[in-house]
Amino acid sequence: MKGMLHAWARGICRDWLFWAETAFAAWAGGFMVLNGVKACRGKDAAFPWDSGAFNCLMIASIVLPVFCSITLGREYGCGGMRNKMAVGHGRGRVYFSALLVSFMAALWFAGVYLLCYLGLFLALAPEAEMSREPGYLLALAVCSLIVLLALAALFTALAMLIQSQAWGVATGLAAGFLFVIAGWLVSLLLHTPEFSPLYAPGSGQLIGEMTPNPACPQGAYRSALEFFYNYTLGGMVFQCSSLDAGKPWLIILNAGVTGTLATLAGAWGFHRKNLC
Image 1: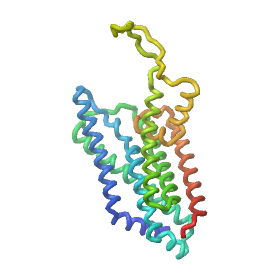
Image 2 (image 1 turned 90 degrees about the vertical axis):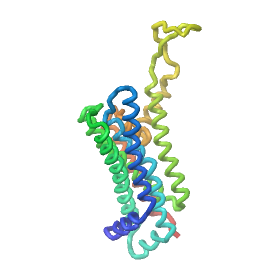
Image 3 (image 1 turned 180 degrees about the horizontal axis):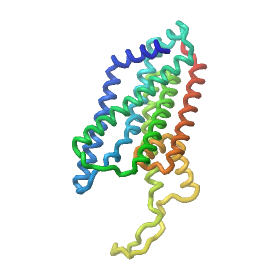
Image 4 (image 1 turned 60 degrees about the horizontal axis):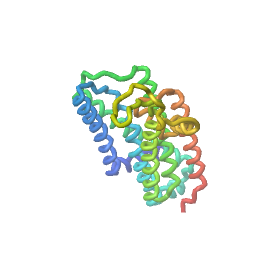
């Protein structure tokens, strides 16, 4: 296992795509600060330093599938997978070494984002404060770590089961963007006000009464949205990124179960996969 990890590390350090993804994560952290500080100064308001810190999960949802598909998929193209097994490495050892590499890459991209985000933030707005309590932010940090590892487990499983690099990148990116977009849409629907102001017809003058908002989800539709928001990676990513985790313990539990299931399914599928 140690020798395989060293081989992975040497190959990744020489890979220009890995450093391009690292640069993208750094740019995203800086852009988030510049955009937030500019918007808040235009409104004469303070920009809380924690408002965009956990967006590293959204960046990981986009960058990590490309890394996994290209880096792990390259092993199929060059015959590295077959060679490792030919010299005596079992499939389980090969799979879990790739999984560990994906975990470390996920932590690397998130760490680069946070380093650039916090560094630039301290330079531009050192007087800003937090928008949430420290205890809540600590719980959210634990949630984000578990969700990040679950993302790595899922994208590793996809990359190890899809032998084509092109199909692996397309599938992984589609899943990553689906997580981000679906999480945003579901959050928008769930936070739709239940009542809206009533205006006089024709004049547009506010009457002052409140009327039920037909756009607010109700019944089974709302239950389905809440299920997605609480039990899928897309919802968990957006909850952490938007500081909207009502039940952090539920995110930790669900992300842990999702990551475990993805790992078991990936390892089982890879064990039965024909590498010829």
